[in-house]
Length: 179
Image 1: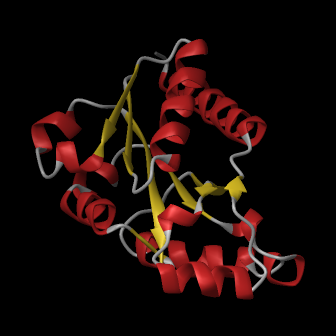
Image 2 (image 1 turned 120 degrees about the horizontal axis):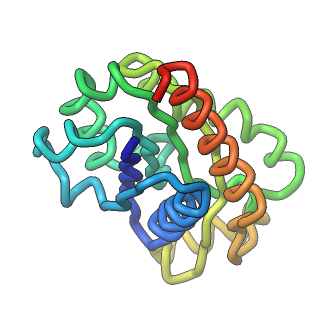
């Protein structure tokens, strides 16, 4: 069972998380391929060759990046017939405490358009890296005024736990299929 881990990254956090998921799945013996979605586009022949998918995107303005939503839309027929997991990379950990509690509600807003196209096995919202140079000047002023904090908020243990869970599900699917 070959797993395609496809991602849309803006500043690199999503790409690094996708690569880590691929490493963990490979440790479990899962053949994986990690690729940026914009490299794949609508090349259906490349997508058809995979048995499962882990798809992720950076979140900007409460939505996946356009290349990610286009990829899902263009390949939804294939994706609908295979196991798919989704992950989003935003900034919930950079939020001050009162706002951080709203992250689960915002996660629903991010995933709702995707759930109209797919019935994924699961979704995970991870935090990424936020640096001043990632924002325009006005954005930096607003970011600080609202009490947000710059930093690297990737939780590698959480990424590993989720990838381990995916690997267990893939193994279980193979056993059920008698493979």
